[in-house]
Amino acid sequence: MSKQVFNFNAGPSALPKPVLEKAQEELLNFGDSGMSVMELSHRSKTYEAVHQEAKSLLTELLEIPDNYEILFLQGGASLQFSMIPMNLLKEGKTASFVMSGSWSEKALKEAQLVGEAKILSSSKDENYRSIPEVNSSEINANDAYIHITSNNTIFGTQWSTYPDTKDVPLIADMSSDILSRPIDVSKFGMIYAGAQKNLGPSGVTVVIIRKDLLESANDQIPTILRYQTHAKADSLYHTPPTFAIYMLRNVLQWVKDQGGASGIAQANAKKAQLLYATIDESNGFYTGHATNESRSHMNVTFTLKSEELTKSFLSEAAEKGFVGLGGHRSVGGCRASIYNAVPLEACEALRAFMVEFQNKHA
Image: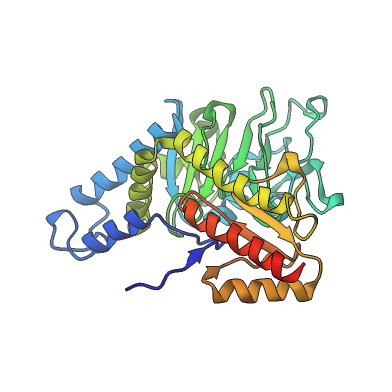
């Protein structure tokens, strides 16, 4: 009998149990090939079917228009911080960044190594407790692009609606909330996401880029760093992370079985409301980091009254099988990451523990 734990890790994070069971069942003999999917040639018809189905499912679930290209890359969001300005930030243009957390800071830092990049808006002065406002009058039509981070894992904030950037392409790092709710892809010039929160295991990065940006991208950079290279080769320019893409396909099929992005969004809202209600009803025993209007449905961040109490909370939680509840050092306290694959039962169990702990220590 397997050990029962409740996985609230920030990433790599929980995967749907049916997806893991399917991988286990097919591990040694995929598609009657007599081999694991990890052993297949990425040029084989057997793997090709997996690759194309992953793209097809992503297109269906996110309703991606025909004028976008889907790429499966490696290097995580961190490599995209460099690839984006290399490809899209041309001389004479400026990249504008909306600062909502640590990952925004890292993206800006990398862009500044490549070209002109500036801060459009920021909530750093309040330790990123909220999503900053974007004043449309400050958007320069000559900007190369505007970059946002759609969900902030460390601080527990999330964009509820996206800014209207007019004719300037909006680029979003959606690593931690992609496919957690329906989105209008046509509002973005590009979306990118490391898979390890909502799409699968670590190892593959999904890039959804508008074809006009792709076609006008800089081609005077190393071949493997060009989006055009990967688009022309259907993400098979070099050996792709085949097992990660296989798992991505399986997760996407699971999302479809849950009712797609709309069904997943309803489940995520229910989980988040359960935990935020626990915080709000605690009479200050628990304090949420994010302002109410910026609260994330993916990462619930909160603090207790003292460091000693926090240590006791995390220690007792660990004994009861709760994994990954420690907050990031820049915020402290606790963080429950409740990505798509985290079941409602895990959140119900955490709520019960939080109430019990408060009753014991209040």
